[in-house]
Image (cartoon, rainbow, N blue to C red; front, side, top):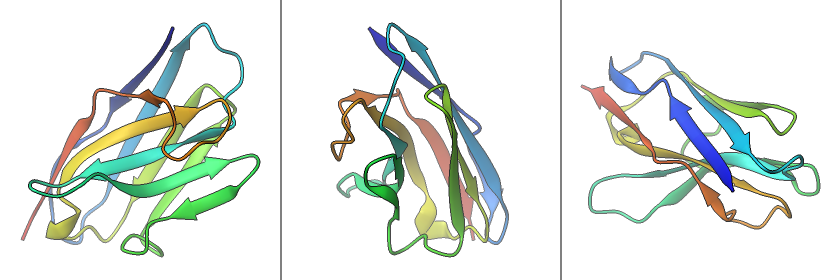
Length: 117
């Protein structure tokens, strides 16, 4: 069993920054891919950032140049969000996979990010 636990969400004004963290625990030693998806109210879940040993790093078009994701082996993954916009509001989910499928099979419970204008 693998658990992903996110933290760091909250309320921020437009133009501000937040840093999300996701810590991995459970019976797995290697995750090829780790990253983030988000879901805004009334919209489908979308890719934010995903770091994979086999695929490299991918960012969603709407966050390129503003968000940066890093990972600490298979133990944790982070999302630094700068120049936040109201349209970045949503629930952010940590996501991971041992074989780098997109999306991965493991999901966190999500953390709310709200950007006020």
